[in-house]
Length: 202
Image (cartoon, rainbow, N blue to C red):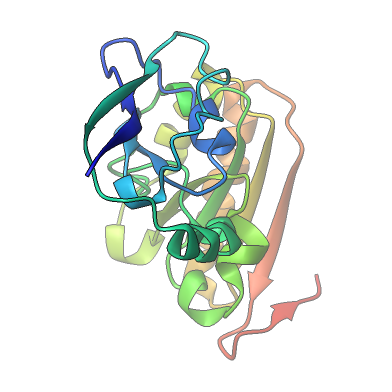
């Protein structure tokens, strides 16, 4: 059907993510530092995202598009807390500098935690830029890259989620080292998840 729907000019997009936050239906997401219309059928054509865009990258157009699916969009809205805000999420693949890092609450998690703790998305990911890794499998010192991410961007806070197993101590150590080496004073916290999916007191 022909209907009014948003158009995102990637050349103008600065990757700030304001439009993705403003879109109540979850039709917009951030992919490789650029806003993308992920689902035509989630876009209601009302344009809540337009005034949120600081660069004027979003406009309306009339074109052939899937019909707005209000029921699916409403369901997606209730699950929106489980959506990633940034991509890629692997520490090794993530850029050192990206617009979505500025003013971000950074979540650095061991990749097993999302499987061990059932409510991981709702409790930890919401309103966070996410980086994940496994210090044992990657066999790399994350502290150097994390130092540059923290140093080059205006990170608001850092949350670490790790497993209780000894090898996951490498993740916590890398973040602590990165914070020290960055020369910045940023609030940070650590949550430890047990292998049976419980949050442990420290």
